[in-house]
Image (cartoon, rainbow, N blue to C red):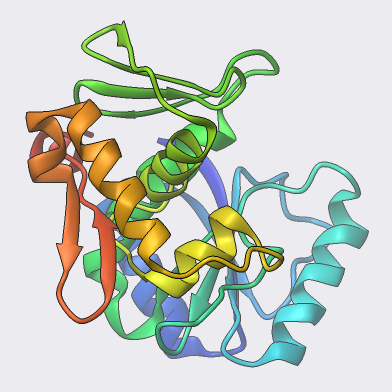
Length: 224
């Protein structure tokens, strides 16, 4: 797939591992450095090392100067599972787990990058979420979801393969000003599973000791 990808990190080891994964996934061309240069073509995606806050901020500032309002989706590379990932990032993966995470991340981030000005969708097998219309459908049939059920589903689907604690989901979906307990998350997940039916059994997973994770169908991970 022709998708210019910026890999912005001062770490040559991380550059090498990300490039190897991108080459295997047939993404490119890949342009790598600590900061982008004026000669680089416009990117479809930027993978930015966020393990050091200052380096991350410098890279984002350079992207802003280089691209203005035409910023691509930004995927942050983190040292470990965060309580919150950077708000400037559309997604993240761990530096210790590049091969396992990058394929699933790129499939969804690239889909958002190529979405048109009109309706935008997340798709996972039989399930589709219309991000523009705040709607979801299974096998083409609309799902009767509440706003929070829809927001929870869209949040998880947009970050496949990542486990989130109940506290993280409360913060990201309900917001900091929500004073309810984490039991609210369990209730909404249970209702969401009931409405999605058997498809939820293999996709909305409970991660013991942590919380919940969205697992894309096997055919999605195998898709080119």
